[in-house]
Every structure is written in C-alpha cells, then in structure tokens.
Image (cartoon, rainbow, N blue to C red; front, side, top):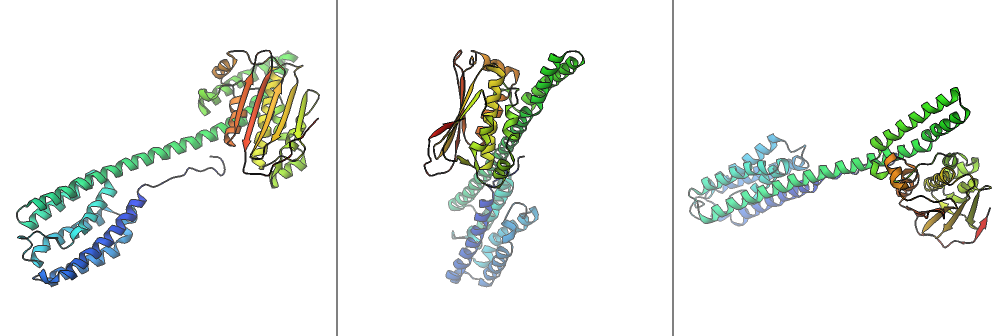
Length: 415
C-alpha cells in the first residue's frame, strides 16, 4: 500500500457495547430505587436488599466485561444471566404477594441487559437462547401465566431476536465495507505501480525493440526479444494489475515521460522536496524547437507531489505526440493559474486520433492516457479531458484543484 494511504476500519459494534454498559448501570440504579421507594411491600426485605447489593456490585465490577466483544466471554454471559434469573426466582421469597399481584421482579428491567449482551455478542440465535430462559423464569415466578406476564415475555423475546439480527446484518455490512476499502486501496497501489512500469520498463523495452530493428543483425534478435517481453509485461499489467476496462488509451513510447521525472535540475529537486513547488520550473525543460511553452508571469505554486505528478502527466501527453503525431508535428503547452485550480493544456497539430483507435488501444492493454495521464490526475483529485478531431490534432486539458488562493496574474510569455 502506498505510503500515507491506509484503510479506514470502523466498528459498528462499539457504540452498542457502550450503550449496553450505560443501560446496565441505569437499570441497576432503577431496581435499587424501586426497592427503596416500595420497601414496605416486601415481607422479607433482607432478601431483596441482599440480592440488590450483589446486583449492584456485580454490575459495577463487570463494566469492563461489556466494553467490547473480546471481553464479553461466554462464561461471563452465563454467570450474568444466572444472576438475573436468580433475582426473578427470588422475588416470591421477598414479596409473598408477587404471585397473586402483577408487579416488577427484583432485577426489574436489568435482566434485559443480560439478554442484550447475548444479542450483541452472538446475534439473534444467542438472543433467542437467553430470552427463552428469562421468559421461563418469569412464568415460574408468577406460578400461573397472566396476560401481562405473557405479553412481557413475548416482548423481550421478539425484541432481543430483532436486535440480534440487526447486529448480524451490521457486522456483515462492516466486513463488506472493510473488504471494499482494502480492494480500493490495493487497486490504487497497483495502478501506481503500473504507471511506474509504463514510464520506465515499457519505455526502455520499446526503445530497444526499435533500435534493434533499425540496426539489424544480432541487435534485431535482441530487439525482437525485447518486443516479446514488452507484450508479455503489458498483458500482465493489464490483466493482473489493472482491469482492462480502465485502460482506454494508447501508451506512448518516447522519452518525454522520463524527462518529467529526470530533467529537473538540483534547484528544482530541492524545491520539490522542501516545500511548495513552482510548476513552471518542472515544465520549462519540455520547451524546444517543436514544443512551445506558454506560462503565467507569476509562479504557479503547487504541493511538490502534485507538481511532479502533473509534470509527469504532461510528459506522457508529449510522449504520445512524439509517438503518434509524426516527426514534424508541433506541440504547445499552456499553463493557466485560476487560483482554486491549475489548468495545463497540451495541444498538437498532428493527424488526430482515428475513429476506433481508443477502443483498439483498450483491447491491447495500452496504458498511456489511462494511467500516465488520467490515473495521475485522478489521484490528485483532478481531471484529464482529451479532445481529438481527425486531421486537426489532439488537445489534452489537465485540471488540478487546490485550496483557496489569491488571484494570480494570467499574463503569458512564450519560449
């Protein structure tokens, strides 16, 4: 994975565990307050007080156990549920009228927290298991089922199963999202590597093939082998690194791309590595007898990485001019600084791109415009637009956004 790039992982469970911890504390306090306010209805208040004291200590001591799924073990869940069931079954011993008059049990709604812990930990099946025991304990405590008791049992059973099912769906969605983020990060890294291969290895192999064919003899055999390796490497990159559907353009084979990375002098290199970089200094070396460079009168300042990637994309565009427009074709580079974005236009007076050529290049797995140009701009949050009319040349417009900036001069000088 590229440096500085990471897969963001989320946890949909963590808020549920925090809510569960808060629920257990609040319901424990609620059960204690009920006993204090209605202490007179208990024939054996010491039974209720003893149980609630154990319940309060257990709830506070075991808060770390409901902090996450790892801490919430099966043993803890079993003991926790047992304490809740014990409180339900002890209610008739503390309140002799509990079986004849509908009322709350000793743990009250605290016991629902135990069922919810099962649901969050193991899903709806675990929730059904725990809520079944709670329902059975409530029926035993009442002695004979009443409408209110049955209603409460069914409510807890259905609600816990529903929550458990939602947790399972959330877990599955989280795993899917994490996998998608990993695939996206891996794909972007593969595309970056594919661009590097296109800008270096494929360029060299293509040059060896051309020179070997021109020299003839043993050099021609070497050129043929280099051509075979180039085809094999292109096939590997297009099928193994980047889907073919993302490779809609032809790849150039000139030396302009290498110039984008290698022709900067020591001053430019130091500037690019230490702070904001003037894009003009990276593009100026492209100017020549066949390339006209038009720039603003003021510095075009970009972050070093963005400036280098944009210059490399310009180099790839010029490389396509060298490769496809012919030896006599001319090219023009125009740099425009619009404050919030920088626009670089590369135009040539070549024959243009014939109809159907882009589709053919896609089938051949060529990466020039797709990765060396569009891929670089996409990584910067920008766009690359290509307009070509057969017989009237080709124009590539590169746009790179940046943060708010003061308006800059837009006068242009030519080299």
